[in-house]
Length: 238
Image (cartoon, rainbow, N blue to C red; front, side, top):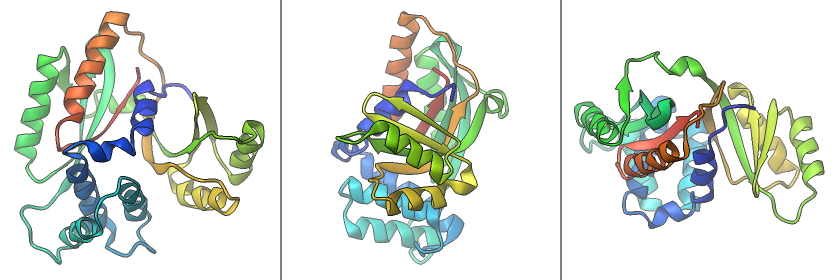
């Protein structure tokens, strides 16, 4: 599948290490609250919430933090403003197309912060629809390759109904239709495959072609955006 970002690979590799960052639990709590607000607090009926909580547990997020975030999302806990999920569209250095996913209780603060980071780093925010047409929404399952027969694993993914697979380093990315993500994840797990991460994602239809200097500038932009508490995911065509 074209358009898969190297940043996505880096992001998944450091998913567990994210707990060491001061803002990791803040990001996870906001994502949990958004999912609980959208689909309720029952993990049996809210697959999006279940996936995020699995990620939170992998990052060793305390149980109390998780439960508080769920209650904030469902409205059981009145703790500040409502958390909303908002996407911003931008171009980074080298005209790299970006979808920036945020979870925020203050949209004015968030849009101002992101615009400032982009401008200072050689990027620019653009209007809705300017780059989103370049991306396709998919289900994404990440599996670490370790002491397994890769060809057999790929066949299991295809048999489970995957649309596409991509091997990058020691990670296998399995892509599904968004509506098939849950059943394919559960099928792979029933086959004894350990899933690192499963979530809805966006992949680009075509790759950008930045220079080495533009890539370095873009990596610095990603670092600055990742340090912002409200930014929970970044999709690009680098």
